[in-house]
Length: 177
Image (tube, rainbow, N blue to C red):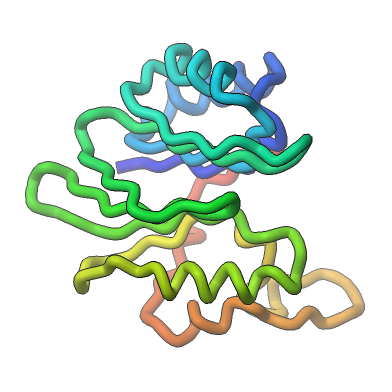
């Protein structure tokens, strides 16, 4: 299974749609999670058709920023049970007996609001002991080694350190704009 998670910073631009189409054609993802879509529902529906996905879940932006979009095909049964402007929580069934939880996250860009967001993520947990995946742009760091610059940055994601987590860097293909 492959998942594309991309902070596209606006999905309406032809160059963005073209790049996303190329990624989907090359990687054939089962799921695409887009952050900062800055797009209304009509634009997202056109994108769904262009990328040949059967399902879409979209959270509209507020003003000129934000917006989340989740695209997938019927090969997976995705039950979205919680969402807000910065994250989507879903239970995913591969229809072959594997069930897992996925937290699609766009970390709040305001540091003070990230703690609230992490409380909401952990409080609205429908997990029944299934594996969990946290994917997206956290707008934060997990360790100081990820930071470049003079001033140390406080960590708001301490809750991720308490659970078992695997480092996926060697398995992730990075695309940035």
